Image 1: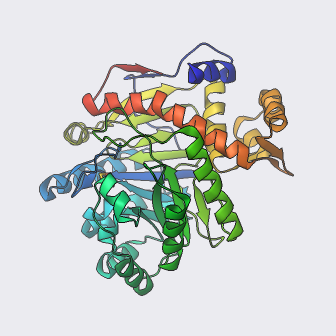
Image 2: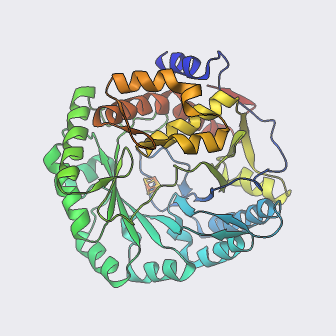
Length: 415
Ligand code: SF4
């Protein structure tokens, strides 16, 4: 109800977000500025019950078949642009991408045949894969940023999450032997009985053993995940988020987004906050000025589509102008800043003309403060963003991912 009302208000329309199976056979990205790339590798040796992402149990033969299809998709899409297109960054997510570490060099060669990357390459890792041998392979393939899914160093929460013990000393030794420009570590907060002291200890350990960036994101109970972890109440969650934020500020860490903090200004890891991006692989999404599309979640259906030399798109949303603006502002605000000139350059119309009243209201409520270039979220605004994001995830993403897990190519989804 809240998300529907907000959508209607902000898009000035009753038109919902309608994703259909009417997909393009070509992707028009040639004129996109600041384009990013994302590659999804959906294999894990262990399936965590709380995890909502598209993943399957690792099997070498299936993984090799998938990687062959993935490189064909890269050539198929890359060939839609003549010459090498300049892109900002490339992120490998999953799943556990390093299960394909021996072939990441090949995937990078396919990418480099069509794209020139200017701002680095990031990879998500499971803590068990942080070994000098694997880190050296990643470095040789051109990786510059790591995101390690620690989730928690505390035994109690690892048990709740069904994860194995993380060896902090082994992580420190491997990261010291093979350094990277950004080492980010992911943690989950709002787990049952979790306290600020638990999270503070995790943050301190992360920075002590070699991280220069952390992401602390809330536990979200997706309807299709088979976990029985109780959800923390709103007030308790807010107190934790406020305490973490205040602690990081006291330590001098820079808040780069709603959920991330950096100890060094050059460190950064975000596969989400980009104006336009192309996604390759199962479940990968592509965002362009006029559309958002998502690939099938089925590894088998993905490989079959690629074998037919067809794009593996499951659903496409054609944006109205206001829908695209809301999408743009949502992810820009995730980065804590709204740049008025950036908005005007992207849409060709001033931000104040499209959303002047809403921005004034947000300033009046104490959620935003005016800056030289636009607006910045206040701690209050960051909490409400975080709160709304939770609704959005459960109302939209839960429904979409839940459907795509069951059907390789659904006819339509309306949100
Ligand atoms: S949390 Fe990570 S390791 Fe666990 S199933 Fe999800 S992607 Fe795989």
